[in-house]
Image 1 (cartoon, each protein chain N blue to C red):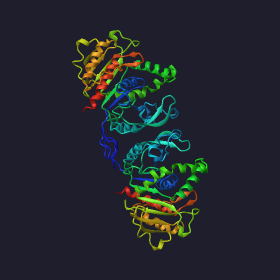
Image 2: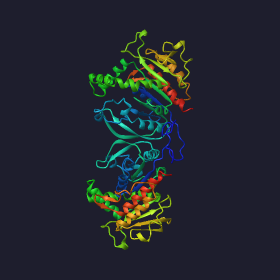
Image 3: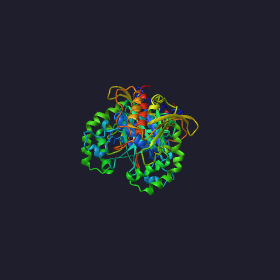
Image 4: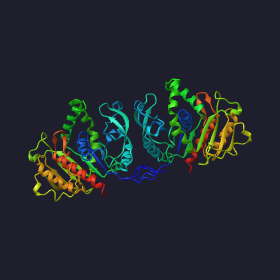
Length: 309
Length: 309
């Protein structure tokens, strides 16, 4: 018997970034900037919310929501993540969010890098073993609900009441299966207004980025200095679980010239001749977030550095 | 990185039998007796003709037929065969022969044994490395065409002319991709009338079974003796490629009491308390073939012996 990677082929290690978070936590927005920066030829994007065991009609008779591991082929998700990390192709299942139907699968061949995003990528030890960098998106529930209402009414044809009912129904499974994944992330991202600066939900959001000592982050101590304190600052604090962690605060109203300096400093740590990608930080056409751009840059740093190990 | 079989799990070896052959060569008939004998709980059946890259509408604009490897996800077929042989589940693609559509995939967990049948299971070295026993069904083209016309007009809604046109279109790819697999089979099965006995296409067919020295076949030398020469005989001959091979001839009109003796003798070589399965040899309800029963018994022998290595 030959191994899954085939006869005579050396195993290839593909750097894999995983982005976990609840519905409408901002996974797609974060991912799309990375895809645009590297190009789809270099970064293969895989959504693990397609590993549904049941279609919408079948789920109607069941007592759990798509957040429940039982509602998903977690064994196949694990298997596919391993194959991608080893550079092997997969035949990925496809779930159509518009119709709630399971469609014909698609052939996915991992390119230079892989980004995996979804509800449950960090839910098992075997899945986590496939990733080089893991991110958990952790907006305050109030903000996530607002984002979900906006998206599901605009893009998925639901009414506000339907979205609220869905959130209520999903809450126990969010608590049981989604939020515990926060503990397994190397980076926890929280977009939220900073009250003491008078920021509100209506305006652009600042971000707090927890950089856990589980992987080697770019050394920010000499990048984040008193000169650019207006843009961001770094401090050590205790995480929810009491463990020490570096917290990077990036302010919503950081002036572009300051964030650009910070971006260039982070970028210079990567061995590349390319300039800092211009597409980072885009929330929607014409709307930019400096905190988002810096977070995306840190993730690009990790992906690019993973090839140099 | 963990291997595809997961953390801490010992690899399990699942005996896999592969049955290759052209369209309507008798793969399903041969397989179904094995499934009935062992039961679907013990024998997992996988058809590798579901690994279509294109649905029927997409194929209409292409210059090759489903027989062409380019028309199939051969890389995924190889991967899934390896996973099954290691006891791992797969999410198998599904092609609907009635509509020509690719449907949602199905979760398949290999049970105690696996039988793989289809057009191209022996087409690559990596696929062949996954099998314990390989069979090629090699009826004379005249017989296969008659079987295909009968099946496709009765069960798939085609006219006789459509089936003939299809056979003509597929012939170059049959020659290029299907028939070369005969060289890689441990067992080659040919159902055909024996002219010197006055048999015709209309009656029950005798069978010639080439037992190649690539695997350890049951020793038939003392089973097939002068007492049951009327039922079957064994002789050494040269194969198409000039290599020596054992050829077992099983006669269509072999009396049941003689074939039963032969079956019991083969079965006694297997370490089992179960009686010889009664369901073997069924072509269709009420129609039985003694040669088919003995071939199925030899295949069961190989599957059951593979667990004893």
